[in-house]
Image 1: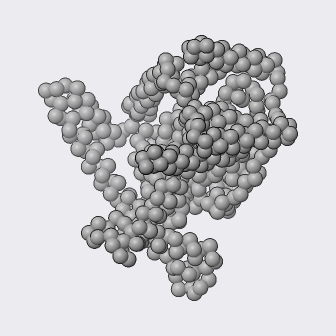
Image 2: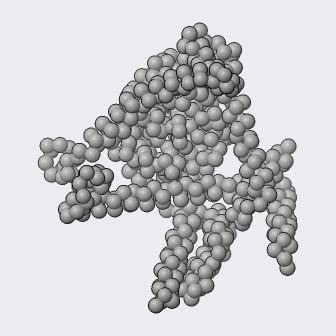
Image 3: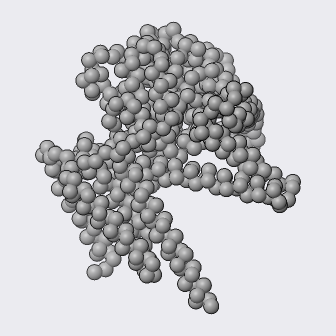
Length: 211
Length: 336
């Protein structure tokens, strides 16, 4: 069984890689198996963990669970055209609850904390402590402050981008492009890592050429 | 020979090659490692061939995309056979995570959330292994959970591998006392939200079905206030962003992150603002952490392949730009 599993995994891995040559039947078969398995896995996993697990195995006495279950059932009414409009009730609950929660989370974590982290003393490690920061820290602080300011200026469209304002906006777009470049570099690294993972499987687990 | 015949020939060659090496493995064949000389000769051949491609490009003969794919495949695979290791420099974000863990006293309770699935394992699994290994070495109590269904399974794979080590076996680690795997819980960020008031409400039983209260390690853990440190391994949603926004900013948890390289740039803002204590970004971050932990895992092993592939990609970017600008100049000359 172990041999069969290894060969099957290798067959599917090579099938996906074969797309680099051209779109072909082997790739299509592998892709279809992957999509079907993923969908099946999620359905089975959510059913056993969420539904069976919470209503049978670890039966909760919390009434909120049953409120959630009723809302979930109402969602399924979308399948009945005549009363499908009822499915909008749980949907509106989800939209409202999620936006309410996220509004607070994002405002606190991604706005307030980030603004706080951008207001930096340029030449010192702490506010009011003099010129005690190292060269790297000073340069880093200057880059953060200048980059944030010029990036914001670029997105200010109520004034024409001319003169000093235009030059600041130009610096802003450079900063944004460098950020995209760094992000793209990391993405390449990530994709390479995944490919290394599969090559390691083929050469190590499957063929035993490396440890 | 027709294209179809060539394709069939390549498939037959792959099958024969695979069978030969597979039976060699079954027969107990050893791993293949190149000598220094062979490795350097291969590197020289690669560099020379890239130079040749550049010259051909300048002369106006362009290569196909499949050549790029073949080169990337070769430079990812070859370093795995080479006897070299890459020099790794520790970045401040990795060091700060390590130092934050080092400061914890023995017996500290560490929560590790495995929020990824097998496709992201090449990047995140080495981080998980080295982090849990470090926790065991420091006598911390490890509580594992997952917001992704396959996360706790990845954790089990990591723990099984760690426990193969005789040093770890000698510690006689016991499930339920030294570590537990609480398993997966559906609900995304709302699971973290509920854990802020009660762990037990989200995990009434563990991965194996053992009731929460019957495990000595977690019996007295009510919520985040009983956790000394948290580490999140994330490949997307739900993951690091949600842990920062809810666990850190709402419940004051001390958090370290291990992310896929795609996600890492987004996390640097949280690092800079002090919301997280440290960050392992991609395979590179994993390799740096392994170095700090004095453990040579897969991230260290793969770094040479990673660097070789980056160099080849940079070379092809240069070649592509040469082709683009020369092509532009030629078409401009034609227009004149």
